[in-house]
Image 1: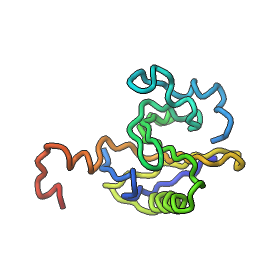
Image 2: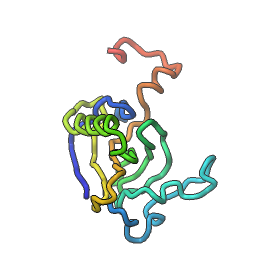
Image 3: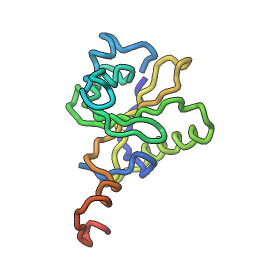
Image 4: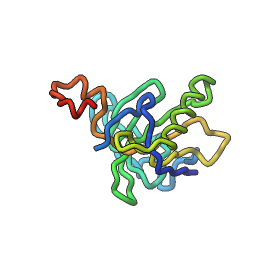
Amino acid sequence: MVESSGAAAAAAKGTTASKTSSSAKPSGGAASNVRGRRGRGNLGLNQFQDWEVGDDYVCERLLGTGSYGKVALATKKSTGQKVAIKRMENIFEDDTDCKRILREVTLMRKLKHPFVVELVELLYPSNPQTFDTLYVVMEYAESDLKKIIKSNINLEMQHTQ
């Protein structure tokens, strides 16, 4: 099941940035849907083989990890759009975390601002018996506030307002 939204993302944990499915594997197998990347930590294995993002997304590389899960760079095949997919596992395990995740998604659906990443859609398994992982598909931002602050870039007053 897929839910779409044109709303923008909130400056919630793991989504602050400036702009720049079923429990069974998707048909054709998960390996046909995603491309692995050789590099440190995955020994050349497809690190996205268990990501259930459907047939329209191809995960390309891991962008980062956080307290709620992992974020991957992906391409939406039907449009060619680069997106970030945030995978949140065990979302119902802790009441407090569950409320925070709900709050983040709710804010992302409602807020719309050119300097906040946009929520593209939510992906979740069609089988409610196995629903414990949520995939939040967001607009891809090449940078985030943390990277800009830590960089040696000299910001002008107009950038900081």
